[in-house]
Image 1 (tube, rainbow, N blue to C red):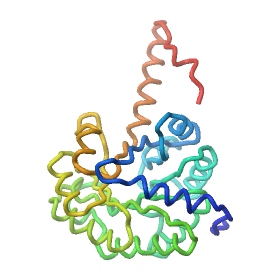
Image 2 (cartoon, rainbow, N blue to C red):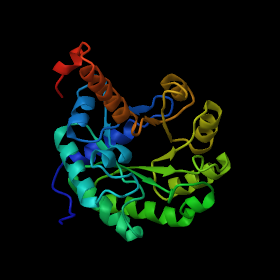
Image 3 (cartoon, helix red, strand yellow):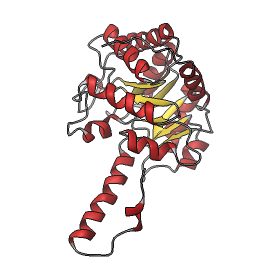
Image 4 (cartoon, one colour):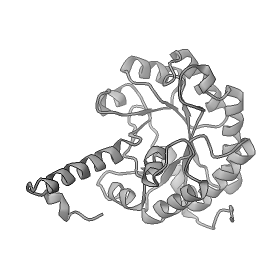
Amino acid sequence: MNDTTPDDPTRPEKAERLRDLHRPGDPLVLVNAWDAASARVVAATPGAKAVATASHAVAAAYGVRDGENLPFEELEGVVRRVCGAVPLPVTVDMERGYGADADGVARSVRRLIAAGAVGCNIEDGLEEGGGADALRPVEEQADRLRAARAAAEAAGVPVVVNARTDALAHGLPAEEAVRRGRAYLEAGADCVFALGASSVPVVERLVAELGAVSVLAAADGPSLDELAAAGVARISMGPGPMGAAYAALRRLADDAANRRPLPADLSYRP
């Protein structure tokens, strides 16, 4: 597989545009997609500025569990199709980086840049459960992020690296999320994605300590306006948009099975 970057003069510009959209207090809001059709729906919405994939949703679309169970070649194909389907910058959820070591992460980043991506998420979570043992050691994760940054620079595309820490999600204190976030920013990340930051006070503390912070929005969490007021730079929805889409499909199936009136949405086409 050729992992070189095609001659695309728009790709560096798209990466810079994506970076400029990360504004604390005026965040980039991402409705995550999982294939070309969902990406087109999002990109065609007035006000949409970028497209992001969600690993859980992409994996589910292929019938496998999240957690790098989707072969990298399949992910690469999804990225190529999504990037070819929309004119907006595309950032990709790379999970743990799809690499056994830092060099492996760099190779995967190069290939996704070649497929059209100008941003990526790389997480430090290793497994289900709680505590520090479920996270990659900080310096090892920092090495992987440095490798991702170096690969992007070598390709001539200033990829936006969104470094996810699962510290809060695994029950560790905010201090640990801050410690990891600082190390990741120093390693070349542009933004720290604090999974599990589900209250305004915690979000405000992370913003005060780290600056560029990304969070996951949920129906039962702070509103988009509250998160913006807390100073976040980026808000995403993870697998939630797929959940919303398939909840609508489930309602349609139930209506059809029970011969109830069908929704006008049946006429919608991506």
